[in-house]
Amino acid sequence: MSNNTIQAYAAMQAGEKLVPYQFDAGELQPHQVEVKVEYCGLCHSDISVLNNEWRSTVYPVVAGHEIIGRIVALGSEAKGLQIGQRVGIGWTAESCQACDECIGGQQVLCTGENVATIVGHAGGFADKVRAGWQWIIPLPDDLDAESAGPLLCGGITVFDPLLKHKIQATHHVGVIGIGGLGHIAIKLLKAWGCEITAFSSNPDKTKELKAMGADHVVNSRDTEAVKAQKGKFNLLLSTVNVTLNWPAFIATLAPNGTLHFLGLTLEPVPVSVGSLIGGAKSVTGSPTGSPAALRQLLKFAARKKIAPQIELFPMSELNEAIERLHSGQARYRIVLKADFAE
Image (cartoon, rainbow, N blue to C red; front, side):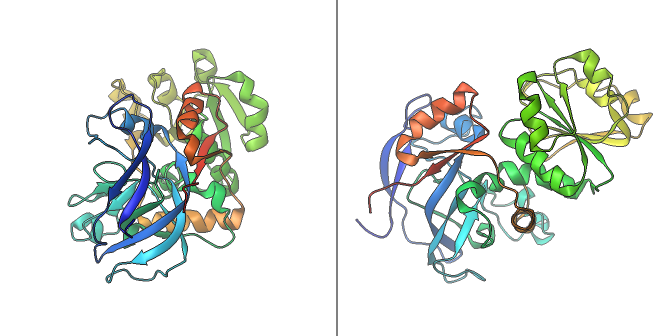
């Protein structure tokens, strides 16, 4: 087996179980880094790509974009990294580094060559993965490698809005949907010092969510309970992909408050312009985050001992792990441990 051969698990068609798959990755490009995978988180976006829900999948597809591993090869143009260094790779594998957004430090919004780790590119359900060196994120020594992977997608997705909206410890933040993203948001906001309200459709989680750091828990599907929160929130983070009573949630915003979408709600969101103008409110959204924000997040998580709550599966049981994710019972993020034969 050549050094360019990658062992992986791939979907050959939408809806099919993943099967062992080998491919030749070709020569490592000068700007790329090759990482031997140790752990890889399992995200709902992986399922969407595996099943071609976004109509962008090229089969066979190797998913996985919450990757922790060690560098095994460096391209000649790679900077600031070392062989053997433990690093992470998230949603983005490549950006052009030349457009205005990249030059301005917003590589996640690259308008040139913007390559997702699992769209037209082989991801982390494999023994090795490659990415542009700027997107190879050094892992702090005191950050737990086993649970750190979900920070690189779910974590940065909820962390970046805190930076963008200049959230401070004096602010009250609501988190809608407490799953893979939402539970990390609560942990981050607790360390940030904010007052936190968790909106969940499952009242049985109340005790668990308060132990995690939520100050208040509200049933997201109880319109009267949502209306009772009127005027409270500086920021609402929506991590769900379902339709809720969005006008009621907009009414819970304080003056200058923002409803920020992170989950891909598929139906249009009804917004009354008057409800925004009166309190100078806004509705926004964002993808993941830049390499600089990713580095900030990992350093913050290491310093504050923030770790996603995970369930660990061997990568060889990937299909079982996907079934567990589909069951809705995972608490709260599934991580796969690479167990390929050497």
